[in-house]
Image (tube, rainbow, N blue to C red):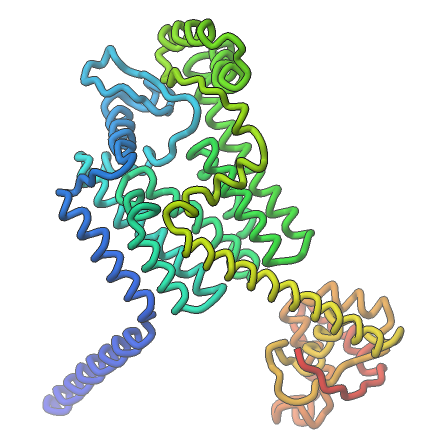
Length: 480
């Protein structure tokens, strides 16, 4: 008896190990090899730069990494309430020098830097390394998934490898704790729009709202370009002007939330009169000042008295306040540094727009011909597909064989059935009731009487089932 128990225990252990091995092999086979290649390339390029530079890359504008670090340190050492949660730009170790506040944006990268500081990562070198291999890596994940969804994994891999090896235009900006967020926000927004358009994102409008609230708390100009690009891409993908309206409203609500939070922090710290003068000097004075010398003297006094950061630069901005300059600025640096690549990208973009536009026109023509063929007694395409699903219990993706389509529906029947198309129990009961007796399973009403209907939907299902039995049906081969 004891020997049998031992053999059973050994057999169970062997079976468990075998199942674990098979599960591991199965998961390994499901790994995306293209993404692994991008991941290895990312570790090699950015890990190599960090190691070579002792985790402090001397790249263009990487002083912003120190800004994020000092923002985090000041919040931790002197408390969030000391600056009302605003970015404290003072680099002094003396408490009397704090806060010296930056008021023109929420500067959201400091929030992640503050989290790292709380977790014990309290050197700028470690903060850069952790940010590059968390936010930066996640940004490339968004980029890869977005490009793979709209094209192929091969194209996504090539594009990611090309980005991470373009030192002048991209790589040097990605190894800092501040500018690494720009790729995260740009491709994160595009990937979110892609998922919402494909109906793959849970709570889509809530996610769009939360993303844009964080985006508009980042910078004042960059966020506008990103939000516009995301919105235009969403319209281009969906081609349905009703849902993009909701998408745009969610974006606008997120932007208003970020602005309200920032304005509330400013009023809590300074009061409305100071906030109003800060807005005047920043936007009105800089853009429309007639006497530059007097403006600079007044601005210097105001900002020194209230410990507010303000760069005393008042260039003539009239040349930049026009739409052609805004469009030309998007391509100016690319034309200088990488002109061949700009031409390739624009050529691919033009081909894609032409292909999608042609496909949409062809689809409209097909729908019109279908409506003309069906005539006034035909059923609309969406209703036809739904009724076919009702009658045979098939999904729209099942393309095998002809579908039995119910035609000649009365409008009230169509409205009743269409109104409950999302109720699974009703749909299954209708499909069962509409099938001929020969199609029922051996456990149907042939042997055990009429089928059971779920109680909450019994009345509705029986009413629609009676209508279905009274209607004449014909067989039409359809493809969806």
